[in-house]
Length: 92
Image (tube, rainbow, N blue to C red; front, side, top):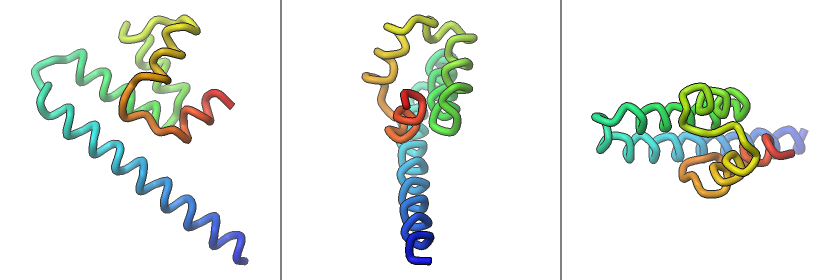
């Protein structure tokens, strides 16, 4: 029972972290509403934070990311607003 409660608390903290990161992305996006590529990039990052495979697929299909290991690695390492847990899920 205590293990389940600990797991629930961990999941709540992770949800709060993802929500905060998405809010942060939204705030940065507000300044670039005129740029459709910036909006697509923001959408791709949000999708990544929910499902990494779908997020990368979206970014690649919209020509925001090349489908090469080097470009994907650079994106995962340098792009702000990506959930670290989701990066780990994608890599792991």
